Length: 431
RNA sequence: UCCGCGAUAGCUCAAUGGUAGAGCAUGCGGCUGUUAACCGCAGGGUUGUAGGUUCGAGUCCUACUCGCGGAGCCA
Image (cartoon, rainbow, N blue to C red):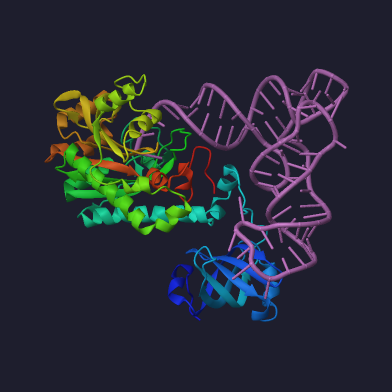
């Protein structure tokens, strides 16, 4: 008999099917077993009545422990008592493997215990839902750019230098060429791509060796970075808001069930539509002062400041024209006011903070060289980057979206460590 | 790096300085509609480590280890 998946059972009502999976939980009542089967696509309760199955099958049910694997044959029945709406009346069952003392019980566990068993924790319904949302977000990202005529130009992971100079990077010996560093951003390479192909994006893992110890940080995370030749800051913001709307609406449309498992208030996500509010850094500082903050002009917005600003809006807010001093060397200064950078951060609502950071890039050779010197960066590794300004430089802009922060926000999670299958944090390298 | 909190059964947690306990999980028994099922019985402990105070320390003190949360940095 051909295999059927739980997510497709609606098409098989009244039919005999064979399901393969793992035991999520079971209950018994003397001469009847209720086996909750998990197959990766969903959950279904299988009902085993002693009188309806061959000799031996009923006693096999007794041997099944949590996460034991088995296959089961039976008839699909619609049942309003079942959480999924369907049940399976079992005619036969055979065991693949008996699981011995599965550590993650259907009770509460501490975070360290679960993190140590991340490889098993992924089987639980909450983690299952998060991974499904994550996948849909990544698909939306690719669909969006592919559908807009962007070309994927992946940046290298091993790089000779820091792209922004400030962060602490992971270092590794590289043959006779000294040390290589794990990339913290593909942006500089994406700029080269944009000059070659016009509209590009890179999408891959990035690494930060900073000892950040918060619910918003990982040492290894995924970032998607579009870069567009001839775009200015306003074009950049237009792209960011259109992109974000597409991602959120795609998830709402295709992952309703998963968001329900996560008990996410989707009303707040429905709001994520164009246009997103745009405020200047100056206006953001005004908001902070109005709310009683002692924030000083010239500083970067901290986590708490971001939360106060984003609380004033019912959807993500774009903060632009930051003080140049707190932003990276490659960001273009505002011609109207050289103290400001043509930069934008998109802050997610509900305290989730910065999910996008972007800017128009410095396209003038002399100015860019000056910035590199100001930041005391070594010039040699940036020679290729300066070439982009030597040979047909044009205005261009782009941004980076942090995938895990986006997943965390859309799922409404407490901590970013649940957004990636195997999180890497300052004190966690395993499993 | 700095500040705060924590570590007791496999797990989640209780225990006024005076005999270390419960629920879940595990094992055995009962139940033909259970929904983190329920009922009965049983096994399960070097209280993170090392010192100290005390007649007596899970509890008080010191140091260390590990973890959690926050700051800084950032997506």
